[in-house]
Length: 47
Image (cartoon, rainbow, N blue to C red; front, side, top):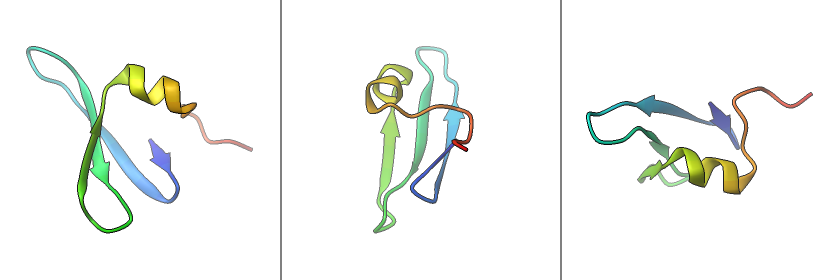
């Protein structure tokens, strides 16, 4: 998934899945699928 020019990848674990990537300053960030939905992000590219 891409947002604001940054890639986020889905990491799956035994307990929960999370989306991980970096912010504008290179700091790691992680989001749950619910947080992605609340932000209005989608898995498809906007046209």
